[in-house]
Amino acid sequence: MDYEIVIRFLMACLWGGIVGAEREYRSKSAGFRTMILISTGSCLFTMLSQWIGGGSNPDRIASNIVTGIGFLGAGVIFRGDNRVNGITTAATIWAVAAIGMAIGGGYYVASACAAIIILIVLAALPYLEKLIDQFNQFKQYTVSCDFDEDRKQYYENLLKQYTLRYKLVNQTKEGENLSFTWQVQGHAKNHEGFINAMMKQPEVKKFEY
Image (cartoon, rainbow, N blue to C red; front, side, top):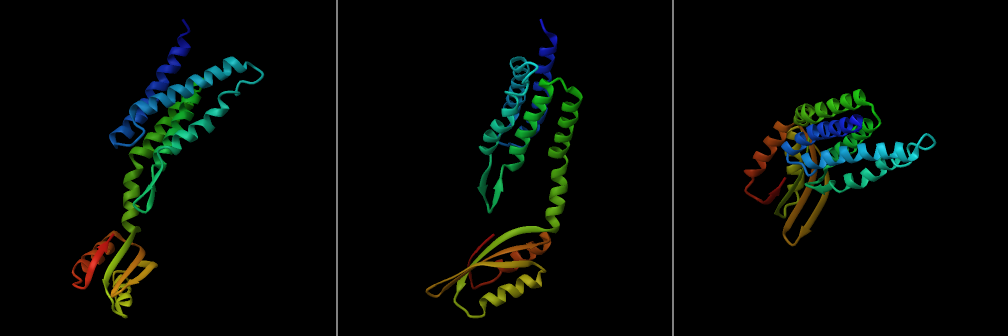
């Protein structure tokens, strides 16, 4: 029995499972089982590539893992709420495949270091992201109200009052109804102040954010 092969598969399951557990904890589409399968499959393909390719062409199969895993990653990316979601999970799939390849190639220290870095990025950095988002939060506001020539300027002055940077992206008039849409950036507290102020406007028929 070749214990080296067993060790590689166990390590691929271990590191893939640890990363997958973090994704599962956050209820992501590619979780515990998926990451184990990706890591183990990449490990196996890398070993098969070395065995089949031999000394002349040891990367004949392994080189296609990078391309093939891209199709799997694309399946978890989707657009919603004015932003693209799933990119981090797709990148994690790509990185876990690299870990499996490193283990399949016998580079245990490199695979362990990469797995630890991935875990730090996934587990610790979201808190830093939230902190950054507090200082520069992006939102899209849509306001519908009765027709008034000065209404647009009034709302934009209100945005300025709360120190929010804005860009008008849509403006429509239907009968006696006006509708405006702005893309707005600024501190989370300033957004909160603007939203509270808009909720108190009696002429606003509809306010979305």
